[in-house]
Image (cartoon, rainbow, N blue to C red):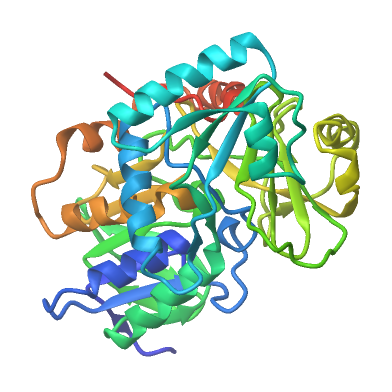
Length: 393
């Protein structure tokens, strides 16, 4: 029988969220032992390892905007973590321009640099990804593209150097007794702990026996890589076409493109955050590619269904779970908001005063009393308006 192990804090999930948590929690000198458990640290199997890496800081939710701004500040400290190439949102109609004007005004109110540029200037900023015949564009010079795997690896390395243990194992159950967490059962044996944080992304529901609905709904999402090309002598901003639910970027030696312009599909994740390619994705990509300049000759070299999590209000679930003392979660957190969300949760775990507005917006118990099936339908309904949030007032 394996020797009984103990830890002060167990983090289930070693993606960008779990790894960042380990880093921030071990950055103090309180001497607490932190253990991160994941199936594989070298080759992350969740969304962190395959996310396209678009980091647009502005969000209709003020809370998510704040968390993104905080995350960017942290990622810029990491070698190769974030490339601040900027971001463009393209308006292809007058109605689209009206929305961009609102986003520019609101972004500036929140301290983000943003400016409306002509279609010609947008095409000059991203000549391979934007045609010059659109209405206008909104430029966010402070946005960029992140490498989730690089960021996670950095946090893992730093956390390990600060005393964290990284354990490769499967977690089968979170144990509770008499109203508090007692530890987790794993393929490497039982590990005793007084604090457990669930940070497993798309697999959150498999361990979320929390007496409350946990509507972290994995969904299918198509992305494609184009043929390889020589790196350009310039760096293009990433580009979004909000009216067409399309986004695209230069990955350095190839272009990538994804879209939300298809019927939402719930997806049951298996061992990795990749699902089967759906036939309807092909026609959707054909439509999306018509937005790209013909000279770019963007054609699919590789296509994949990258599964990620949705919630009924497009907000993460980060905070304390009342089912047991010492039980927390950080789920449905995108790379864009990961470091900021983790810093918030770290404050909470240390017993510090946290921002009440952020706490309410991210509260994992906010769907209490609602039917999970109905919440799943709401989550799927949100998919086609992925950047629209319904933050509690």
